[in-house]
Amino acid sequence: MTETAPVQVLLRLKYHPAFAGGVEIGGPGYSLPSLEEPFVFPVVDEVLEALHARGITVEGALGSGSIIVIDAASPMFDLHCRFDGHDDCAVILGDGNGFSGDLRFTGPRGLFVTAGFGWMDAPSRIAVTIDASCAAFFGWGVTSVDSHWRVEGDQVTPGALMIGDDTMIDRGFSARNYESHAIFETETLSVINEPGHVIVGPHCWLGENARITRAARIGAGRVIAPGAMVTGDIPARVAAGGVPAQVVRTGVTWDRARKPSEARMKAIIAAL
Image 1 (cartoon, rainbow, N blue to C red):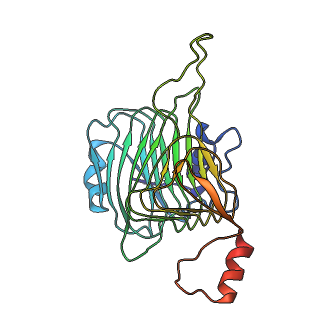
Image 2 (tube, rainbow, N blue to C red):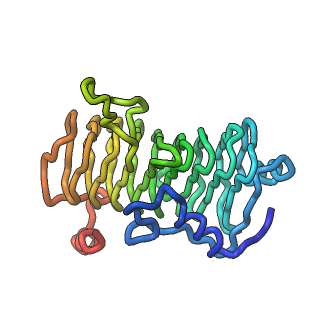
């Protein structure tokens, strides 16, 4: 374990190849981890016991050059990481509430980042699979009852998953940025589907058993109804439902409280 300057960790994060090409990390609504006193754990046999003492279990072959970064103020975790022998992967954990999850890297140079999960009756739980050169980012205050995510791509077309601050994710939600298999035209033999990005704006509500099934951008303040299947972009401040998901009401957003005050509602709108 080594202590390092926060800027070195954040530079590795911001210049990851998955965040090139118009994916802005650290912009409004996508808070970077607060790493005032980061500790970098190289993923090697000698530090596995120290990681386990912080609630992080590394399983399977380690590979080389991978790191896990936590802040001195970070809570205990319940996190299982599989690098499966792949090199140069990184897990960067901000200082929010503890959470439980399963992370698996299926290629080198994968990246998982959380600015810090929120709290809603219980710790958040996620399962994330990350391909080579791909990245998954969860902003500040995100809560997840139990959700599943897959980020596919490679070093030529790396995929990115970005979840904005204060997003609430219900039980059974799942998302992926690609169908996992090529679709091609029979006459031209042109492949017509490629991995893209899944970008969810800040303060979205992703309903129970809803799904994102391919690359999509979802605007800030958005509500996805339970059971909906998102197959493309959805604008901000709308509610959408159905298979495939369609806008059912515009000019709406949400709050975690059952009966928010007028001042609270105005503050939410102003922040979107």
